Length: 235
Image (tube, rainbow, N blue to C red; front, top):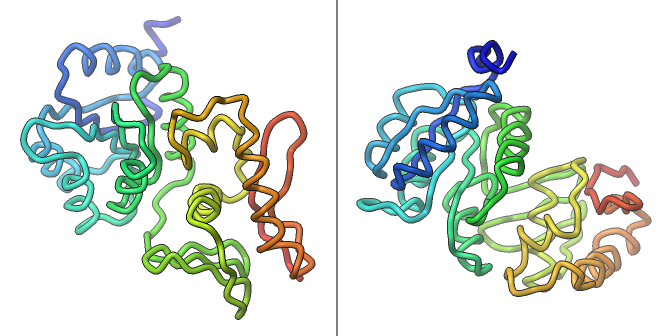
């Protein structure tokens, strides 16, 4: 059965990774799950393959021997604003994750990671399909200006802290998706925070006090036992 599954291609990705052993192990595991992975060991090869061939997702390591992953991401986005890009990195600080998203990445995974988590991220990104990127995210009448770090609810500007903006951006990039506290910590905070910390809950409360309650909305929802999600909520 595993032999048959390995030949049922459900997704095609590009893996830009300069560690040969890791790349081979990932490709083998992905193939068993129906995911075909083309490999590129350098940033320039990754740019060429990503812009010449269609992929469901590009998996891109930040640390590459020639051109770093952030620059590779920018070059891909210059000609392709739709294919989802998942960044891989050993760097865990918030500025590095923000830089990756600013360069055009859709999601971020820090090494070392569990294979099942990588697979889940790939499937989620592939389901989203090709979506044109812009400097603005919108969920209903809630709009985020990513370049100016400005948020509007309808025509009203909403003032947020830098951390609240980072959390809101992480959720606005995944509208309707239930995100666990651990996932939100990973996306919007430094990894030094303990998963048991209530920092996410505190920040969510602050966001609700700014983007929902003054406007009579309930767009930032709690999913009991699972986490939070951001949804469109009409006045």
